Image (tube, rainbow, N blue to C red; front, side, top):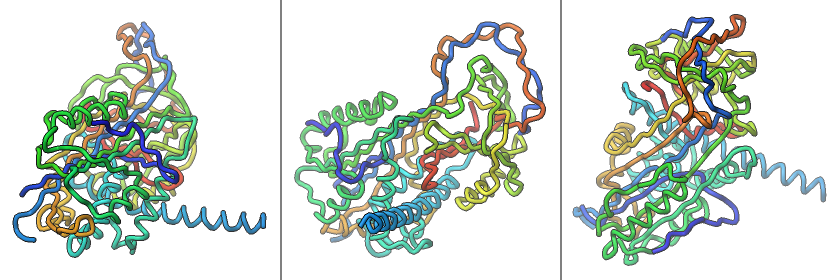
Length: 458
């Protein structure tokens, strides 16, 4: 079986990484002006950030409980405004849902989720839902609050996908999508067309029943290729022979900071896990101009660091107190982002942030979180008759797998030792992330949060 190596869409290219799997069955800031530095230079040339996600295995199981120039310019301008409005509405809904999900995943561990990808997958499910299942999802996904109709959602996602996938020479963004369907299983044509036209999905028939091992190998090979081996294996075991649908999306993003870190200023310094336990990590330092603010009601410092091209940025929130992350999380909401943006002012800032890698997998915890958000019937007595005519499907499980790497190229040759000293400016505001913090990867134009997470332990 061959899985398509790329999905060619004339109007849209999706930015998402997801998987559906269907079954036919039942602290305080660092207060130092000088630090010790390695004598031997770290062999580092640039700073890069790379995100890879393989998100959401959705298991569907069959239930056993029943059955002129100016005119042209004006028209183009109106269309652009309409597109931005549609995309912005979906961005708002996505952020609302993402914060709700994040809040359910709080704890002492690191967190890494993709609100955009999760919202995209849930939107696809929503379009196939009816009745109380549809109403529950509309509330949890923010559609009811924003008064979005199904047509608004379809159009908004199509517009958002088009905007996000604009080609750029400043960063690497690769996406691909595939929907695998058991050759004896039928999904409604209208639903299938919605996925193909508006979410960049291409359906392909496979044989889960008789060739499960071959399907597993093909899926893992496809995922490894699309994620550049950052996620080399998606499935450890073959899918069950009663699998009916497997929806697979992949995204790979790599961006370089607009203001790069100088490798000579990188050093091993303390980071306080959960604000308490000290550990040594590689920290990167620079003084440069960034949008920066102190956010009083969050008792936190905010720093926005753009990537090359200025289309995507990382927003970091650092509690003023070393142990203030929980209080920040309890106060934070999607509306906080607009408030933070209104406070940001560009100024020279001393920045110290750690090199880190997060690999997170969510299975049962994610399902429980969605249920806690009010999505109940989807996982039991679901009404998905907008997807299939029989009306006997429900989602039995959800998986979300993410990967993020924030590092500097050439760090493998780094060494520790010596007594060189680097002086830090005492006049500039300081953003020293030596204790737990929250971060967001955002699309600047639409404001949609592509990734969000927290670094609690390193």
